Image (cartoon, rainbow, N blue to C red; front, side, top):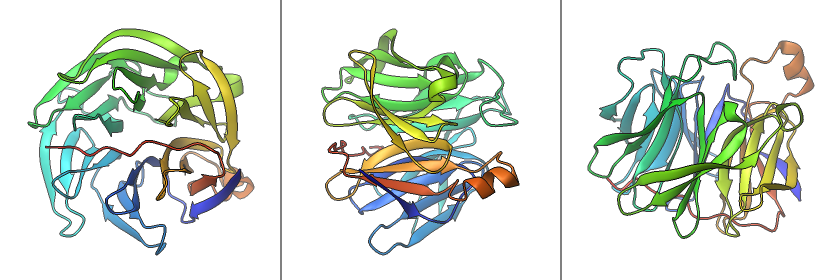
Length: 297
C-alpha cells in the first residue's frame, strides 16, 4: 500500500469525491471554499467553478455536466459554459441548513442530505437535517428527517441495501432498498464506531466485495469495515487528520482517493500537518470500487 498526494493545493473542506468514468476525472467539492472541482489525474489540471454558497455534493449528469447539492438547492452545472440552472429547493423553513453529502442510485436518482448550522466542525445544530431524493423527473421527496450530519451513502451490488451515515450517531446504518420506486425500510445499525478511537464517521464508498471504506474525521484514517459482521478490517492512514470522504477511481477503479479538510485548524496544527486540505491517492490496496453513477434527469 502506498499513500501519495494527488491534488496538492489545499482546500478548506474538500469533500464528496466522485470518479467520473466518462471523462476520466475526479469530481469533488470544497464545502467552505464554495467551489466545485474537476481534476484530471493525467494532465494534473484542475477546473474549478466558484459557487455563491456552501456546496455539499457533486455527481455527473447523464445529459452532460453535473448536478450539485449546494446551499439548499439542487442545481445543474455546465462546466463548459459555467451556466447554473436551479432545479429544486429544500428546507425552505430552515434558512441556516445546507446540503452535505450525496450520491446517485442505480436508477439515476440523486440522494443528498442536509444539516444545520455548524459554527465549528462536527458541532452542529442537532436533529434539523433530512435526507432527500431528487428523482429523474426532477421532483423531490424526503426520505426521513431529524438527522444531525447527513453523510456517506453506498448501495450493495444487487441494490437491495442502502448504507447511510448520520455522523453523530457514530454508526453505519442499513436500509432495505426498493430500486424500482426508491423507498427505504427496516433501518438498522450495522457498524459502530468509538469517537475517541476511530473519529467521526464521514463520507464512504463500497468495494466490489461489498466492504465499506469510511473516512473518519479527526483521526486521519479510512477504515475498511464489513457491514455484514460489523467488524473493522483495515486502517488506511493519511497525513492529514480531518479525513472527509473517499471513492475508488482511476481506469481500473483501484485507486482510493481520499479528501481531507483544513477548516478549523490552528496555524500550529497546519504547520504540524501541512498537507491538510489536500486530496490523497492510495494504491496497492488489492481492492476495487464500483463505477460512480450519474443523475439521469
